[in-house]
Length: 443
Ligand code: UDX
Image (cartoon, rainbow, N blue to C red):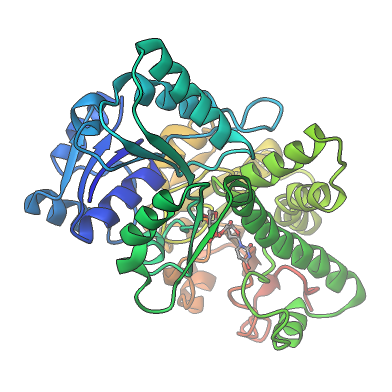
């Protein structure tokens, strides 16, 4: 099929590239000329395992193209995907100006019948707005061109996006027209050959599905973080409780890892947006509100433990910080717990020596650019020199089995604050460390 994907952010670039990998002819559009020029030259704006090689391969094969001009690719396309950002507005709702702007442009430019697919995460009812805006533009032009609007929420995870897209658990399609559903099924069937399911429904239910999936996952995490905090108070070990409950198939093991809070571009934004959708419809969403409150507090738990150990005044203290990204295998620092922990410690006079395998540039040039008390180190061991404690905030694989003797040699004190319970089974107290984790009191 011939496809246009508008927006070369995370979702757009990964989707477009994976569609081209299946032999479709894809043109990815963005208004950012520098980004398009870079992509044409094989420079990928984000770090995502496997993406660069897939882009280069499909550009070479002639399946994948990049352009700033929508009208040149729209004519040849069967399907156009809207994959532009829906940033959080000041009031917590999703800002639709980019989605509706693109819809308007499609209405102005389209010459041939088209399926318009909304892949951005949008509030319930946006499909109707997209349809109305396109129709308005067609009416202004005085032309009658057939088009269908489809909602196709994206469930890919950063760091595993290529795998998630190529072998999805499910593809959700919201549409009110059989032809559009058949076309979408034809497009996705190569991705669903093994176990994935194709689920079609009405547009509003599909739009709701995305918010509910992410909020459900965030709920599991906040629930476990709350349980972890209670475990500490009653002298239980959340790591054991987690295994105890996960073995019940109705509960399951996934997404019940306690930690220093969830971050990223999706959970914080989508939880807030669903709460807002409920409010706008006159409903007070108590559980969703609590999910957010628990997470906001959880981001401070590590800093609280540090203060409890070292006291309020941290001047003269240095902390080795392992992990800046909101999770492993990404350079993304949006809403990352590291931002909150670092600010809390620096505010009390501490110095930070930080290392992350991928997110150092993001931190240095953007998220932590105004914080002079952070220095960036070349390796995890580099951070340790003269450190009063080590703090682990992202569970990168390379942090899993460090040389603990090296830690003791380099650091002033053998103290570890583990925000991801990576060393919970290693009996670090027997190795001479004071070890703090989430959801278990240190011995
Ligand atoms: C999420 C959804 O998983 C994905 O389906 C959706 O399309 C986008 O949002 P992503 O934000 O990339 O994906 O990250 P994910 O792997 O889901 O992790 C989100 C956050 O939850 C991370 O900060 C992670 O550390 C945290 N987390 C996850 C926990 O604290 N505990 C867990 O058990 C799982």
